[in-house]
Amino acid sequence: MADKIAVAVDDLTVAYNYKPVLWDIDLSIPEGVLMAIVGPNGAGKSTLIKSILGIIDPIAGSVQIYDKPYHKQRHLVAYVPQKGSVDWDFPTTALDVVMMGTYGALGWIKRPGNKQKKQSLEALEKVGMLPFKNRQINQLSGGQQQRVFLARALVQNASIYFMDEPFQGVDATTEIAIINILKELRKAGKTVIVVHHDLQTVPEYFDWVTFLNVKHIATGPVKDIFNDDNLTKTYGINYKVAVQQ
Amino acid sequence: MMDITSFFTDYTLRTITLGTAVLGAICGMLGSFAVLRKQSLLGDAISHAALPGIALAFLFTGLKDSNVLLLGALVSGFIGTVWIRGIVTKTHLKTDTALGLILSLFFGFGELVLSYLKKQPDANQAGLDKYLFGQAATLVESDVNLMIIVTGISLVIMLLFWKEFKLLLFDKNYALTLGFNTRIIDGLISFFIVLAIVIGLQTVGVVLMSAMLLAPAAAARQWTNSLGVMVLLAAVFGAVAGVVGTGISASYNNLSTGPVIVLVASVFVGFSFVFSPSRGLLFKQIRLVRNRRDLHLKKTLQFMYSIVEKHDDISRPHAIRILNQFQGYSKGTLRQLEEKNWIEIKGDTWSLTTSGFHTAQNLYNNNVPQS
Image (tube, rainbow over all chains, first blue to last red; front, side, top):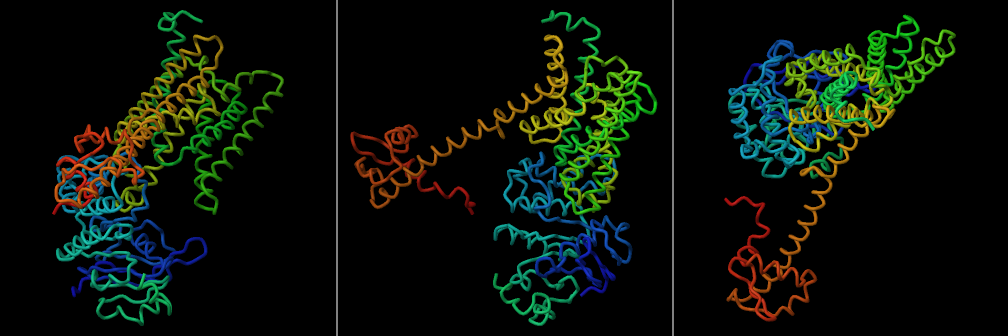
């Protein structure tokens, strides 16, 4: 495995009101892994990603992306939020949403041009959504919406991808299509970090895994640490119920 | 009822009409952002929050110059907005509670100061009441010029930051990760909404102002799925509502302009809700009925297919009587199936055509990719 550390989280603590959601997280993610973050509901999986990305302000701790603070390294990072976090009735098209992925590199005021449009069309093609480029986003199925979000992140051409439950509410075909794209990203040397719910598919899809339940429990290669011991520590003694779901 | 030609020649009326048109346009434009930000009620809260600003500005300066009073409105409207945001972020209270609290608190305080002013002996305060329901007739050229300038500036800002506004409205967190300062964009949008409300107070008034903001945008949303077109349409609807409303109120003596404009805008909303081709209730209902009928037809065809499929010869006639076992069939459906050339009817028998057979065969395979 590569030696370079893509993401380093140090003593991260996050709380909503009084209740800690993440407690003293230390985490190092090496470059080039396809990693799942697993844990029960309310374990702080989404919160972890959001606080790494600066969407949520932590109470304490720091995050480094390739040894520098995140705000200096934004251009290296792409984000796929949960599908449900936006209003899909917003008046816009699939292509337009994907184009938003180019806004960061453009900066303030500058408008996207032909180059950005071409990049966006390529990204749509990669996720198999090119025929739907002019489709209103409220007329896309859940799986198609997820693909559009993925294409938007691909356009950012980042080194590290954070994805919040990209398999939520998609059918089997879309799930396979998405995981194939993620595996391609890894092959290209990118680091992909995915909040994941389905424990059964972890060994098949991912090569690294992080167990999280408010506290950090373990991080490492799936083949070494995806075992009863860590699953029990994360989900409690009844974790097998969770596996079978 | 007044002469229609004077509508175009009367200087005062022309000023008022221009004013309400410009006001309608800017409100429609910025109202679109308020609607898409799901902050429809924010406009209502802000406009009510502006009242104490007007009253206090008069109390302290003793001037009835509309620019001074509107400056007061701007300040208190902005304080109201900041407080609403503060309540939402610092406490457990939800946005609607915060809006309701600030709305009634500021409005109540404004009314209090107004009633205090009314008890003053100099009686100079008369006319402040117009800010409650608006009085377009008091618009003068300088007021209209102010509206035009504000509209111009907000148009430029909107075009300049179009990309940022769209991104923020659709996906705020994502905008944040791309490195945009969402507080600045958010603040810009809020600032211009407050500005639009404040310049509308004299014409439409505190109470009805939010309708000016929301009605054109709600109507426009029905007709388009593009943000740009929606904003443009909302501006047009707002402007037309302003012109038509002013025209109606000028034609019938002493009809209050603000309420008439709001009613005209509401008519747009009602019409759009019913008659918009893609989102309107009427066409939705028509599509529903048509789909039901289509489904009915296909079910009958499917049933025929299940009979025919058991025989080698697909064009073999069968008695219509057989269909009695199947609830879906009627004389009408048979006729329609024949019109589509899916079946042939001879006497009291029917038979599937080749085309009908193939249609039935592929009826439910549409969603599976042919690979």
